[in-house]
Amino acid sequence: HGLYQKQTNPFTDDWFYQLRANSGLKLIEKKSGLRARIKEVIVAGDLFGLVGDQGRGQRIEFFGKETDFPKGPATLALKHGTPMYFTVCIREGNFLKVKVLGEVSLLEGDTEEEIVFKTSKAYARLLEDLVRKYPEQYFWVHDMWRLFK
Image (cartoon, rainbow, N blue to C red; front, side):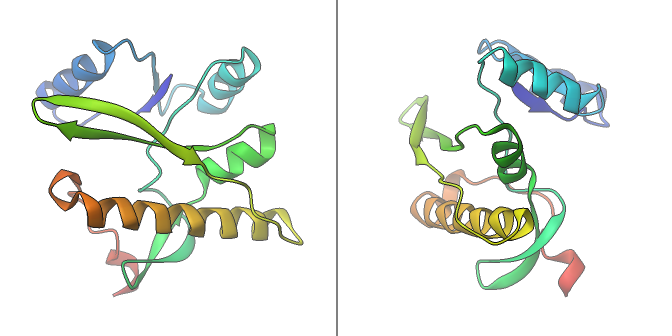
């Protein structure tokens, strides 16, 4: 299962939706009772994936600049006691390969907020390393540093 955010442009929305759904991914629309749907997926023992490079929640340095980095992945893992994996889709020749690069362990902290922050910061470092390795494959159209200029 994967998180899906409906696009404003209906043609773009349909294209992205079909691209993802044709791979066998079961899509959960962001505005569809998300919390309950995620809980159903996790309780059923299925996998739930979301892109952890956009969203709001906490100030974390990303490529040397402070940004508003999402806390959702770490919060979900902590709340539901589930592992969190750093998974990517890498183009190799004419094919896209999904790779699980490893588990992102929940880091220790005195509070839930500190655990989520430290874990998200570790995730951000992994993402930076991946983008450095494959810069031509990282597609980002939003200004993730807009709030802290």
